[in-house]
View 1 (cartoon, rainbow, N blue to C red):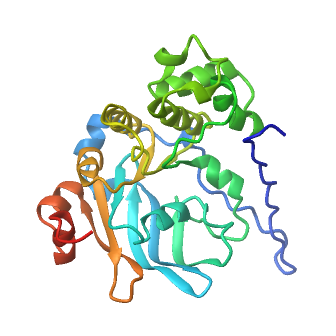
View 2: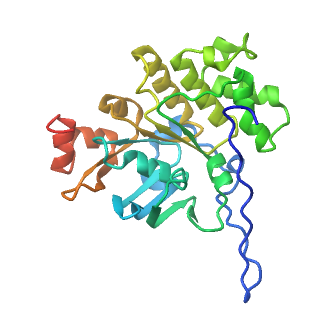
View 3: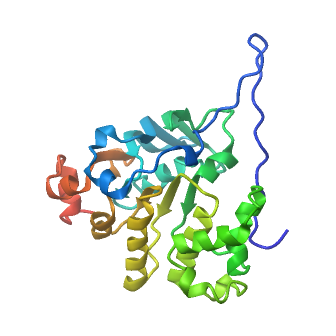
Length: 304
């Protein structure tokens, strides 16, 4: 196995019962290609209430062993919106983000309570296939993490492992164009991805995520290590990508949330130092007319 590769988990078999026969595998969603794409102009004019709910969270709590990290988060995340999570360090933003594609599962003692569904399907049902979850719900991390391979192989690796091998050249080009990187790398696809700049590496990681045709992109502080020019490119890219994907982004940069997000969730710590969702609203409303004094104190710099 090449350095940087991870093992794709085997398909989780359906669970059988002795009374009703085989239980069908949980289908996480209809194929994305069968869902009509919301045109950007129409999407902007449409009321939130008419939008498709992608993630439905009700009283979601997270424990790591005996330690409670997150308390009773209730929110809906909508299709083709960019949704930002803001708040001070240690308040559970990234924990909740990682719950959305089960990235917390390998952590010893992790336990999720409450209800968390994706297109109406329980993400934590024992029959849910984590490989399929992470194919549909891609993730890009704070620090760019390209594989020590060529630019081409970085994009093609996951698709090959998932059996999506046909028309690979077209897939790679489409992903790089989707990440606004094609024109910069098209003449050096066989060169090492490690030779790209930090901003290019982060866009490469976005291209790698969209190459396997996800429905959702989770971005965990994707621009925190980048310079202002590279940050602006990532933000412009988010505006373009949300026409095709649902975006959820964790950011410590409140101005960034104001620039890129349709809706914003403010997380903080309660009096017992447990992460909790304080307020969730349209971004303009949350920053100009916060409903909770704790939100107002945070965005005006009183703490955090």
